[in-house]
Length: 188
Image (tube, rainbow, N blue to C red; front, side, top):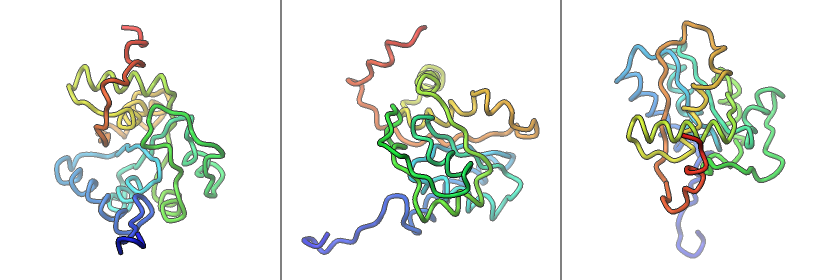
């Protein structure tokens, strides 16, 4: 940055980036006004924080759920403990875009506006990703599969029954087709 005179813009802690991510919620509410829950993957927290700010400002009745791998569950641990709790070690997950921990700018927003954090196993992520590929014909990366896995999980089945119009944010299509050996390891 010093050599080029550029400006460092943090990918998930910069307030303008968080606000920009909130436009996802605006599109959801415009295109599907009947939605009463939004589920999105969480890594550094910029996207879920932006979504939560916009949703709760416009439709406080809509539930906002963060979804993350159990192997990278800093957001879940932070919500349970009531304080920012980074991952103690580099997470090992197929959902590589959510390996980063939430940070000091996103944590207070998540703490106050995200209704719950759902965690899923690596196997659930793989199955959900494959399901989207096969049934929806969308080439998503496993990080996007985290949200789908969360909605299909037993944990989500415990959500109150009035949550019936659910939007899952499918973010990311960074897929290296040559690295998909895990796909052939899954049964039928």
